[in-house]
Image (cartoon, rainbow over all chains, first blue to last red; front, side, top):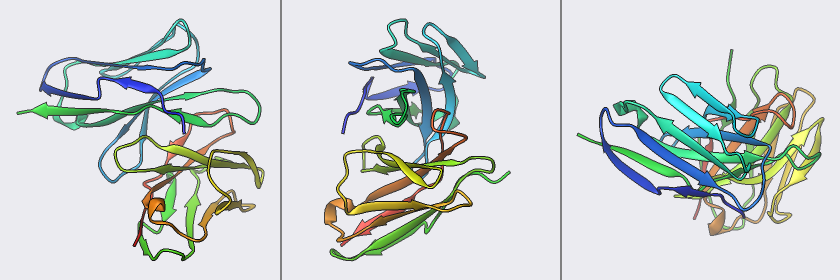
Length: 113
Length: 112
């Protein structure tokens, strides 16, 4: 099945650093969502974006809905150990009968001691 | 407020067998979607249930079927299991098909 392109694939950073990741698609979405997944668990919703150009924050996390509606960005400021995990973007269309989530390939975040 | 719950947590089956996975949505949610997540990949959409009917379906064979009950809980059935069906099966619920989806912890299925 289709997967969106996320970059980078993995990141190795030190605690306190800022993190940036992005997600791109060849087609338009009406909604962009960002999830975090820890090993063996289900994805946890971090931020939802509904409008092109929208910038939304959730604590140290900030996400943006790209103007073209084909991309989205997630920034994490001042990273802490509990930020470790895999971050997935997901795009959603709101056409009747076609509201499934299409996920990205994931960005694995590791904090180096 | 209970979140999305799934059972069982883990399951080991043999090729050719059949399996049923269960999901209870978050309180107030009426829509359930199922996803398959292979190791190292993002979740792939299987199907979505709303008003006890399959609303949309991903690119999965007919061996994958489901059901939604009047209390909005749902089951995923997989027949004639293949080794390639080994994955984490995730259930997500929402307060309607167009709204943000919240995931359960998943069921880890291993087919030997």
